[in-house]
Amino acid sequence: MCMVKSGNASYSILALDTGKGVTPMTSEAGEITDKLKDKKAEYEAIASSNSFVNLEDMDNKIITEQYMPSGSQAQAEVQRLRDQMAQMQASTVEQIAQHKVEAVAREAEQPRKYNELQLQLQNMMKMFQQSQNPPS
Image 1 (cartoon, helix red, strand yellow):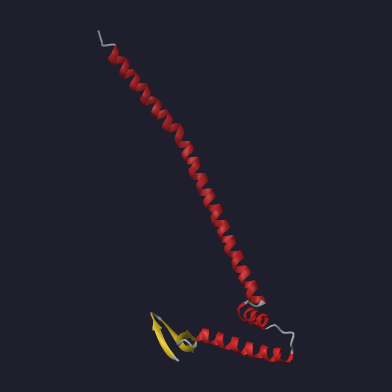
Image 2: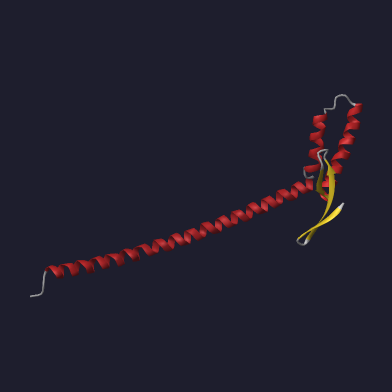
């Protein structure tokens, strides 16, 4: 095992002999691999005494036990996701309210702009009429 430093974090590195060479592995991955090997040995011992055990099903069961969260972890994950959804919903409601405020402001601005353009048009028409009728 050796220590590797990356930025402020240090990692313990184990070497895993895959048969194709040695692959570096973090200590957490090494622990998981060891647990998987132990579980597989345990289930193989059971399988050797019971001909009805399917080795493929055993591999799936080992992976499920090691990687699927426990009940409390699952509940915590569900709560985290619910909190995240509530936060997203609140953010969406806030954005919708902001868009409504902006739309109301734009709608209020339109009549003012229309009146301004109407006045400009009237002034231009007066100027045009005056240019057509020179003063006598």
